[in-house]
Length: 136
Image (cartoon, rainbow, N blue to C red; front, side, top):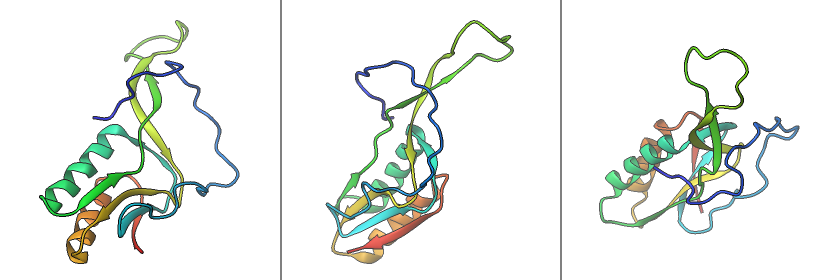
């Protein structure tokens, strides 16, 4: 699974929800002909990204190339079960990427559009958000 090698701060604060909940960066296809675009905002964990990556690579086999346009670098902490209040913040449990609507998550470059669309459809089912397949 994807985790950062080195981080500036081990634990982050949650952050606040933004007024504009649409993405302004990473909204265009840069590498491939087809892409998977997020239509909702949510945190996507490294396990979910890995599941989608396996779905895409399994469908593409050796044809074409694909790119993961997101990387989970936000640490999420968790306290052990049945621990009382106080005692500080819990230890880092997993990493997430906060996705906002409009972000391109995956890109595929292949000459066969039916394979690309099927691979991206399978990957979209692995993610906790609504997605849309876009093309150039």
